[in-house]
Image 1 (spheres, rainbow, N blue to C red):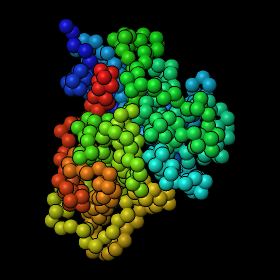
Image 2: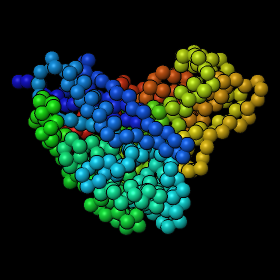
Image 3: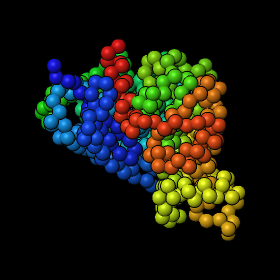
Image 4: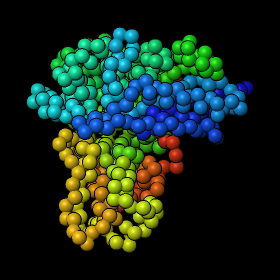
Length: 449
């Protein structure tokens, strides 16, 4: 019998990665591809991407995977994918974009967060939706667009995540997974449906949002135009994308309350996945979303992680390898010679969700140099994780922490700083593409159950 395979995609804020996997979730050799994404930043706090340009990168990634795998015989039964949480874009009645993709780091709607806090009991909404009021979520973005971009608002027939737009373009259906819907901030994580009170206030009809999949195993056929472009995918079913954070936990094997996944990529996050219902009261400063209808994910996210590290290296002109930086930091000891660094260059999400937060350096002296500043920044990120961990422990008795992300893999000294701050040993994930693998495993679990 011929083997069967799954085409996997990981659509992040910095790249599209993909590969062919076998039915056990193992990547097939020489099929891993990568396409770079560049978000547009603006002085107003914008972090945007062109929807169709991003779609073209996804299409190219599929082209490349199929080209790399021509010698691998067997049916490709499904396409499984994960994408970044919290993106928002509009489409008109014909499905054409009416706006760019606004990413999680877009803070242009920050002035509308206080409006929401004044109108609603934020604690009650947080317990219901799992999200604080913040510009990274949909309520503030939608209120901002309705008030300040009436032309875009009038043209928009549906508000989608990029993942939903991908499904619309590939399958002609604007549907979203429970996983992606739960990260919008307008989704009731207990009822598994859009939040009626927020929709009423935002003047959003349910028909103006993507349809939520009725079953975690729902899949869709590709449109004929794509079947023609990719004959090998003629009978392939498309699994609506899941959130990359949820997929990362699954791919790292962190699926119980005792095991947390810690990731530092461009940003950072610490998350716990478990089977069951959300906590009765979600800890202040943390979020709670869903993996699917039977599992939830609780944690915190940092806006500054590996991106902060790279920014400092570039702007402070530190022309050293990560290994050399590690040796230099070790020779100087801990606490960066009295410097305090506030790591909010990209604003604050967990745990304070302060829209006005900005980075700063305190205690800088003539005796300090670039390495001292970099070390202080790394230590500050470690302390932010410690704050998340302390709050997470109130609902999840975490015993083991599994870390992933290029920033940690390349910097043992940063891993040690974080381990010291948490008071726990950290295990590095052996899976180099944890999010990709997690999307595959979620597909296999849900479709076979």
